[in-house]
Length: 609
Ligand SMILES: *[C@@H]1O[C@H](CO)[C@@H](O)[C@H](O)[C@H]1NC(C)=O
Ligand SMILES: *[C@@H]1O[C@H](CO)[C@@H](O)[C@H](O)[C@H]1NC(C)=O
Ligand SMILES: *[C@@H]1O[C@H](CO)[C@@H](O)[C@H](O)[C@H]1NC(C)=O
Ligand SMILES: *[C@@H]1O[C@H](CO)[C@@H](O)[C@H](O)[C@H]1NC(C)=O
Ligand SMILES: *[C@@H]1O[C@H](CO)[C@@H](O)[C@H](O)[C@H]1NC(C)=O
Ligand SMILES: *[C@@H]1O[C@H](CO)[C@@H](O)[C@H](O)[C@H]1NC(C)=O
Ligand SMILES: *[C@@H]1O[C@H](CO)[C@@H](O)[C@H](O)[C@H]1NC(C)=O
Ligand SMILES: *[C@@H]1O[C@H](CO)[C@@H](O)[C@H](O)[C@H]1NC(C)=O
Ligand SMILES: [Ca+2]
Image (cartoon, rainbow, N blue to C red; front, side):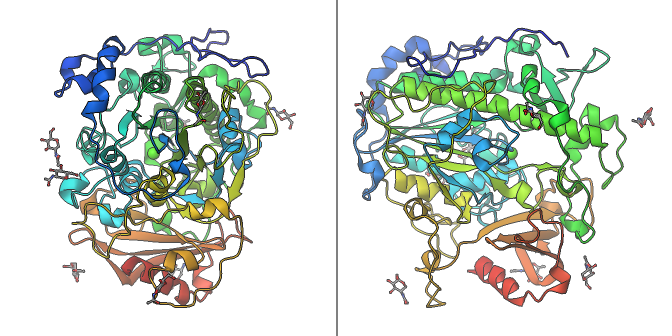
């Protein structure tokens, strides 16, 4: 690694001082897009800077005007030139567990995300429905659980495989919003019909960074000076193919779209999907300086727990396949990584998070700069977490908190913050290399919440009608959701919920019960195999259904038939029970020495509901 390389992207110092200008974008290498690429002409043109002016006039006419009845809500307040609702900026990060200052991590430098949190309601117990990209994303983008999307792997498109039902961005689009996707929002490939579900979900063709294709190339310099496809991959941006990185391009494109939208009469839903800290941990090398190796610890529990059922373990095969890890000859499936290499991974994950924080900071700074911070809801989340050596595991692919827990925060002008007044800077860019302290969340909520609730939550916040709850079988229902809106948790803080009175009252269910977060993970066999992390649908034999409450995590691994998608709860292969108060890291499985019939009933009742 070269020490004194120059950086090509901006460093903007934090205020005090006059509002910082929108930082000049780094070198931009994406090929220009042509109007001809789009079939419908003028609407798409505004993607291109060169024909933006032409598009301004035609945009309003081109977007459907269909609207549903609005509920009263914070979104009812008028935004600048946006009619009666707010814009939405939906930021989704790939594989980010909450190693963030605003989640209490003392090592990480994440000033910009912390600043967003300081103006937001932050959910400290938010969970993904399945800890792997495509199933999690299709779940929260459609507002349905994996058992309804029937996507547990990467290889089917719900509209043809499960049911032709709508998505969150599609709903906003049908309600008059311009919906735009930049970076990784849907998982690419067949699970979104090779088009990120365009044109159903998006008003314009989704943007992908031109340098995305180099992600897995040999771009990491080894000790011998040669290039490898490593896991740990600090780089010099100027030496990268295209001279940039995908997330830098994504930020640039999102900022460009904000500039286009600032003068529009049209509301927008802009989804921005960042790639890091997904592997490879490839980021500008100077971020390493934030994390001296001597400050990096191992996970608190870097060993495979004695009472962990083998079916629960994910053998982190994608990690093993990177050149630097391959060279370590680690045994499959349990062989631990050498301690010093574990530290390198943890160091680079943190560095990648700070690099991500910089991108988020530049994006929010631009939102401020174009004058949209007071009329735009900002959501920040991730598709799932990532084990950093806990339980001897790496990557995602499990039901543990480290894999299922995600950051989740909502900034809603005038609702989550009082200070979003005219002209004031809400999100000035903060330099992760400066020491910034004292940014605390506007409000923290400890309720268990799920990403499947994003659809209804955002609809409510934007003042749209909340989609109805799905019936028991909903494959044929075009618009419904399996996640109740969590807006009700915004206002009240941690008051105790009263005991449920009527056990059969489904209508009241969400409101009267202590909330539970459900996740699930499929396996091909009872013991770790090469495809245990990512079994294909036809190979799934066991499904691990997991339920997390404030007090415990309870998981049952049951027989699963991929031909009729049926889970047999009479055939339990293994179980896990961890009590959070005494075992916060989930290492001491007490399933076998506890009576848990009531928990079993609870999970079965929920899943069969
Ligand atoms: C699927 O639904 C969309 C609207 O959400 C509709 O435009 C499309 O025609 C439907 N496709 C099929 C095959 O029914
Ligand atoms: C998926 O994409 C193909 C090719 O663009 C298209 O022909 C097909 O109609 C799409 N599927 C659905 C369900 O819209
Ligand atoms: C590293 O740890 C030392 C001792 O705890 C601390 O003083 C220092 O600030 C840490 N450095 C960084 C960059 O976090
Ligand atoms: C729990 O009990 C089952 C059934 O007796 C047994 O197969 C399994 O190994 C036990 N697990 C642990 C962690 O003791
Ligand atoms: C891994 O195995 C290869 C071939 O068997 C050997 O050359 C290499 O030295 C081993 N590396 C380590 C770190 O043990
Ligand atoms: C938002 O702020 C801009 C200036 O930054 C101002 O022109 C506009 O009126 C404000 N809108 C609302 C709804 O406060
Ligand atoms: C269920 O609860 C809702 C809301 O409190 C109430 O309106 C409804 O009448 C109840 N239904 C039954 C069957 O008790
Ligand atoms: C699914 O198929 C299996 C094997 O054919 C059968 O035993 C089971 O009853 C079926 N389940 C459902 C719900 O149809
Ligand atoms: Ca992911």
